[in-house]
Length: 157
Image (cartoon, rainbow, N blue to C red; front, side):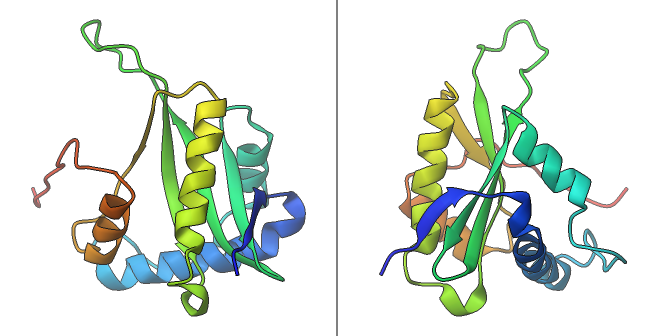
């Protein structure tokens, strides 16, 4: 059975925070040098409200009797370099499906709906970032047609 994919509303705020917290905990475990625990909700009411109100951003949710997944879509600013080819890019900033609901195609449905939303915004490309340690996410996105465009590298100063 597939989930219903729809735009989130502020009525979904608690469910969104629970999903963001699940994603945040994963990131804290695999990248403690980047992510730490913090007090307060996983995302502020104002932050979520801004994403939902903005014409260039949205949060899509997957609902299967309750909200079980989300995908945050944000605009990428145009490159300030005059030699860059102008492109309208939408970024999948976060995508998460509740742990107990994975491997049922919900993530794929969220990505497909995100691609449709981006096309409706006039985007030429959809981009996303995946931490190198998250091999499962790499395979997931590659299976859906995404490929590596830029490898960001890091080291301590």
